[in-house]
Length: 197
Image (cartoon, rainbow, N blue to C red; front, side, top):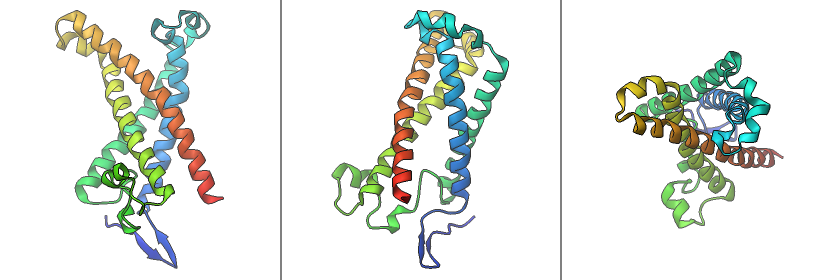
């Protein structure tokens, strides 16, 4: 696969055409996981911090359809993540690595920290959103995998009390990352809508 960025028919093309498909898969997977995840989160009484909620949502805690939909969303997110790693290794365009260096200086970490005046506000916001997405998705994927394989981890990690603590903290961080992801998504959607209007 080669990158197809550049000027095409008088319009600047920032991404390879595989990127919209990545974006679509990630968006669908994320929304499936957030909707089902919030229901499962409240079904668990928000880890005991809000015990009153457990009774209202408890029927959903082990709902197989809900869990299956959550896993399907998770597979989509992990799939995009794996594809991104392949893209980076091959030098292809990816959802997290647009060829933005072709526009001015581009939203690199160095330029963001320096608040370079050569970066347009839209690029600056997009770069911040991208880094926030990467950090939160890594947290969600890692903690999600721990939650899925918690039974196996109980036989690997010793002592047992430490294994339970790892699993509990993974559940807490999974929930926190999900809750933090929501405002970043709203910010990203609002920016996207205002960019095309």
